[in-house]
Length: 166
Image (cartoon, rainbow, N blue to C red; front, side, top):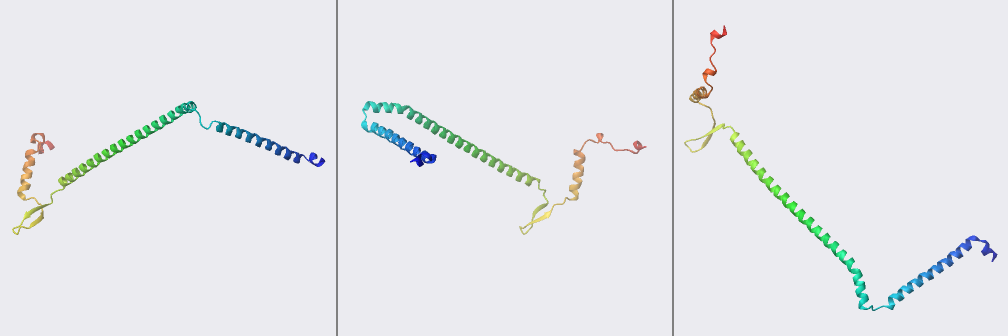
């Protein structure tokens, strides 16, 4: 017996066992009391059911309200995203049309800017022969005459005489 009281580790173990035993009993008692409360009233009266339901109504209302708000927000976001997608598609279509018009205009400009290097003349055999265009002497003389006619007046660009150079 003296060995038990002289050894502090052994005493701490015994005290821990006693405390855990007491705590276990208290837990068992509280659990049995809760079970008795639930068992004592297995069929609650309609008034008690109504009270419990009224206590839960605000919680249910807030849940439903939050769910409705979330659903509305989701719908709004979906509608916004669909509208943005439609706008983007419309912009893409407009840009494609502009690109096609630009390509057509570029083709027309290139076609108009291409110099006519070859003239096509029909041969007696109805075959088309391509020749390089070359102006004739008459066309050259006509071009010089027209440049004098259309050009600036001679009075504004007089001939230089030998007298002015001295």
